[in-house]
Each structure stands twice: as C-alpha cells, then as structure tokens.
Amino acid sequence: MTDKNTEPSKEHLQKLVDYFNKRRFNEVATLGEQILKDFPNNAFVMNMLGLASFNIGKKTDALNWLKKAYEITPGNLETASNLALILYSEGKYEEAIPIFETIVRTKSDVPEILFNYAIALEKAGFLDKAESTYEKIIKLREDFGPAHYNAGLLMQRKGNTTQAVSSLEKAVALMSDNAEVIAALGSALKENGDYQKAKEKTLTAISMKEDARFYFNLATIFRDQGDLDSAKEKYHEALRLQNNFPEAYNNLGEISRDEGDSEKAADFFKKALNANASFGRALYNLGILYQDKGEFSEAADSFRESKLEDWKSRVCYCYYKGNNLTKFLSEFETTTHLPHWSPLLASLSAHYSKSYNKADPYNFCSDPLKYVRKQTIAVLADSGSKFRTDLINQLNELEIGSRKQGRLINGVQSAGNLLRRKEDVFRVLAGHILVEIDNYVDELDKDCEFVRAFPKAPSFQSSWFVKMQNQGHLTSHIHETGWLSGVVYLQIPDNQLDNDGKIQFGIDGDSYPNTNVTYPKKVLDINEGDIVLFPSSVFHQTIPFKSKSERICIAFDISPP
Image (cartoon, rainbow, N blue to C red; front, side):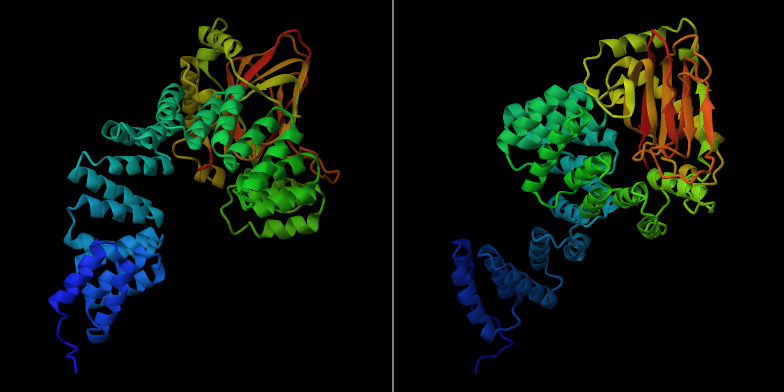
C-alpha cells in the first residue's frame, strides 16, 4: 500500500512539468489526477491541474484545484499568484483582492503584482485604494507605462481630468506606438476642454489604427464644439467599421432630435436598440420623444425600462403631466428616501404642494424664488465694454451648429458647450461666471440640499447662446439635468415697454395641471452685463418683445455634484 504522506516521484513530477511546457494539457490532467490518488494533498500537483484546466477551458475545475492548493499551502506565492490571476481573469475581483493582498505583504516591491492588484481594486470599486496602488507602482518604476495609462483612465473616471491628462501624457511618452493610449489622451483632453489637442491626438490614433471607438471619440469632440455636420460624418465612419455600435446610433439620434427631426431620431434610437436591446440611453431618449409628443404612458414605460439616471423623476413627470395623480403620488413616494437632489422632482413637488395646499416634502430647494439672484459683471456692464463687443463678435463669427427646440420662438440656440471652447473670450467669461457663482453660494442660507450639496468644483454641464429677434421669446421650462442654471446678458433691445424682454420665474409652467390657485412668480428687469443665477428647478421664461435689434445672451447649467 502506498504511503500517503510521501511525495510523488521526481520522475512523475518532471513528466507533469514536461507535459505542461509542451502544452499537452489533457495529459497533464490525466497524469495529475492519477498522482493525486496516491498523494491527495499535494499542492504542487493541484496547482498544475488548475493551470492545465484553465488552458483547456475548464475554468470551474481550474478554480477548484487552485483553491484547494491555496488552502493547503496559503503561504505559497506561486499558488497564490495563479489563483489571484485566474480569479482576476474571470472577473471575480473581490475574491482576488485578499489573495493579492497575501502576495503583496510578502512581495510589496514587484510592480507587476501590484499592477494586477490595482486593476482588481479598481474593477471592484475601490477607486482610492487603486489610485494609491498605481502611485506606488510608479514610484517603484517610473517607466511602467501601463501604470501611468491605467492611472490616467482612473483619474478621468473620478472626474479629475487635469491629472488624467498628466498621467496619460506620461503614458504616451512611454508607449508612443500604442494607438489606444494616444486615443485615451485625446479623450481626456476633450474632457478637460482642450478640443484642439484632443482632435490632434485622436487623429494621430486613427492614422495608426482604424478603430470605430476612435472615430466615435472624434465625432464627440466635433459635437461638443457644435460642429454637427462633422460629428455626423465621423459617427457614420464609426458605424462603417462597426455596424452594431449602439452608442454611435444613439448619438446620431440625439443630433437628429436637436435638429428638430424627431422621426429620424426615433429611427436611430431603434437601431441602437437593435444592436443592444437593453441599451439604456436609447430607451431613455425614446422616452424623451414620447414625452415631447404627449404620449406619457409610453414615455413612462421607456424611462422605467431604461433604469438610467433620473428615470424615476421622469416617470413621476409623465404621471403628473398625464394628470394621473394616484400613480404620481405612488411613484413619488418611492423617491423620498433618496437624496433630494432632483430639480425635476423639486419642481413637481413644489407645484403639487401649492396646487393642493400641502407642505412640500422635497427639500431640494423648498422656496426656490428666494434663490433667484441678479448680479452685474462689471467688465461687461460698461457702456463701451470692449469685452462685451468681442464676445458678440465672436458669437457672430462662430461656425457652430444650431439646436432646434419647440420652446424657442423667433430665435436660435447654439449647439455644443460654448464655455468649454478654446477661444479666449469664452475662457475669460467662464472665469467671471465661476467667481459670481462662488459669491452667490456664499450668500445663501444652508437650509436646503441645493446649497448644502452644492458642487465643490462647479463645472459647465452645458452652455449655449440664444439670439432672439422681434417677438422672440422662450416659453416656461426648467433645466432638469442641471443643478444651478444661469444666464449672462450681452445685448438687450432698447425702449422696451413694461416687462417686454424680461425674464420671469415661477413654480408653474410647462402646462403642469393646475387647480385655479395663484402661483408665485418673479419678474427681473435685466441690463447688458447682468448675470442671473437660479436653481435648475425653477420655471423661467422670456417675455416677448418688439424690436429691430437682437436680444443676445449666454445660458449655462452647472453639473450636479
């Protein structure tokens, strides 16, 4: 009878290794299992069986063998490394992390081990720990390009675009022949507002490798700058290379919607869903189209299926606009335990509470008109302001697409994100606006979520110009995806009567159902150089005016925290 406590023969073990090195994995499995019949606790053989099983696609067997080996010899770094890497490769990041930590305690100065550990941390959602691990790798080995690359992507994911650009520039210097790395730098530069360099890097990546994602990124750069024709051309290039690219179809749909072609937009959104039936953004966008057509039941279904962003708020909106108060109240109740951060829910709750004489339970901004403020940007307000003239001239010279919307009468609204463009006048104006926002927040009472949770580093979610001609006006609306909204006035027609051309605020608008109550409102007189700031939940509209001259302003939204 064989002694179970002795080791397998060296000949058997060498044969096992030879089979493995020659990639004869099935023979490794057969011989390894034979050996374990006589030596059932041999961790080395289990380790070999785990690796062989993984290589022939038996991933469950691989994990089982390696876990057994690790239980027997938890201090064996080779077994631990193999188990951690296979867990990692199978997406079992949370299981892999403690194994990696066992290894790192012994081998804390091996960049390759730390690198896999950092990726597992990031994939499992431990972003801060992943960041510090990438930093440790780079201190150990400054020329470890993939660590700079992953650190840059992580910084971009965390919203630190300046640091992302810095890390990715180092990655490009070390991996200059890698199109993926160069394209990633282009994406980070776009997020950081440097569109020209972003375009250059993305074009460089495309010259090295024709990739649908690179064309998609280039299209998005053009779109953010308001060059919609170029954006559409590049989205179609992406689809030429990958015809089942749901994001490209979706973005073409959004452009078509912004250009006023709802039918074409719907067709693109449906193509996106043909490519990916559960693609939330396309479902959400179809909901917007249904909502705009007044088909609130269909819209609610699309929003609910999308499970995207503020879908619960949108469902509540559809029920309220459809005058189905029972469903509205039931759905609204499911949101009250969440942070009170939705401008759309805030507007619905304020309107319902006033209509039915109830206390407003939603504390985004319970007295929104109190937070409407007007200030003056001195450099714009002077009668002969060169800066204001330069801004107007720049707006007139811009090659930028327009965005059509049904609420704007006798006017045009620009596409893109104006205050993130490279032109000096827009960068300077953005700086003035951010100063005014800081002053605004400092003056407010900290009695609601709008102020308490105000973004620590405000960024422009969107910004655009609006030019109105004679009888121009904008009907009542809110900016439901923003946090703080604002408008800077560059040109106001002279000699207006009464409230002509002024901006009006209130809690009633957008054809919300009302109950014959008097809703509060506030009208502001405005002058050139004024800036008006207000919570994104407040209804606002422009009162029609009569004039041969244009009314020109730049509006913006600040992103939620």
